[in-house]
Image 1: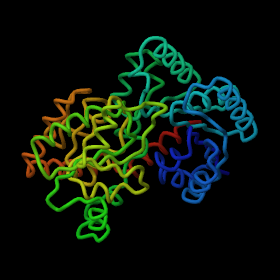
Image 2: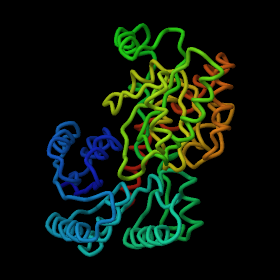
Image 3: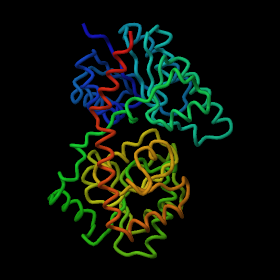
Image 4: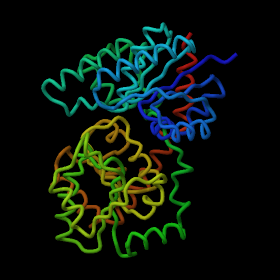
Length: 384
């Protein structure tokens, strides 16, 4: 009889996106139950694609004490009923709520993956509160899995937990990457790519920078727009693709940034897309000036698609990209450094293509998806 493994994320998009394929793989060895917030359509999609059962428990991404207490109670009742061998959570709020509930319910193995720390950018009373919540989560968990070595260092520096509770699975990343799926060869001479370029009014002469992700301040979008605006004064035939959605209630962009996005005709913002590969296929370089990450899927995806990548010197990013070997690394919150890196890419197109080729090789060797899955399965199998 298979042991029961419950995987918990705050929103179902994380179950389907962050862990694509992993739940189906693990279901060969465990009875899997996926738990996330109540989005019927998304949860049904997870059940279908991953071939697992799912259940809805409402969780919010903000600090909402009454709703959070209700979610802890519902998770506790679920864990008491299901009696799982393992509860494994991802994303900050799901981690805190499910680790508390799992400890109260007597779940023997309470695992939490850390894929970024929002508190890194917080200050004052908010930082104190986030630090306290983080410590509560770690104290209730039996094991903590930072998804990068840099993140592990930050956790130890802040004394959130002890070293013996921490482990990075494989070489980092929560789910690795399917390099057969993210393969630029699939889009060579593609009608889909040509149609997309026509739809977005991108010509063959255009050099395309792309950003992929949430369009928020923490991702460095304010700096990116300043850098690109300056670049437009020096270069013609350049475009910036901003692929993602805004979060104006959680982390809004500056009004000047929003105005420039609307008024600069070289900036194209198609919104959120389900399949990012065609957008990488029509691009030449990734700009990813994020302030904080865990182990960014976007950088792995872009690198696997052989794009030259410009990233900030933060954990995760600087573990995928090696400066001037597989991409370029710049300081955080530095629009001038970003401008110089983008300018270098434009003026050294042959070298930039070589960076993309080397990046794919590095990703194939170190972050292939099935390697990460097997390493996590091996970790589960050490539990008794």
